[in-house]
Length: 218
Image (tube, rainbow, N blue to C red; front, side, top):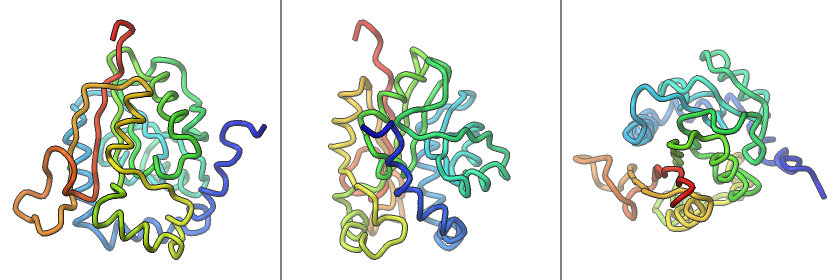
């Protein structure tokens, strides 16, 4: 049986080979990027210490003030380090972090690349403090953008190995792992420029879920 994380390598190969191209997406889609940032930030209170799993090149961790990240891709990690982020080499299913040591765990466009979603969320639960929380940002498979990505994924360098999830599926995984009291934000809502970030899901292509770690008596 392969060790946990051994099969993660195929999923990081595009990011190793095309890290510069990945970063250029944020430069050429500044409005979408800013909306995603705002949606994530809306669910993270100030003054808490977080860990981003799948920190990539630091495009979310740096502006959100998340000082530590876990990343399997050396090329992406090098870019994050330039932004002042402490990067630990590792995979989501086996975090190189002690039990109950962080206030929150952040995963942005990471859940679609992990090998085992449940193991990833159990690890997040393990490293969270008793009153900690998780924030998961992702493209909803059932949204307009999600359907487009699904249709074209075999032609994409980055999304070809990805597994997309619906919001309901992510909520089910989070609940089974041991999270509750969910808050949800959505953005990249087609035709909605007046209120670009809304509560809930079903209209926006980019969804952010916050879940609180259940206590022992829950």
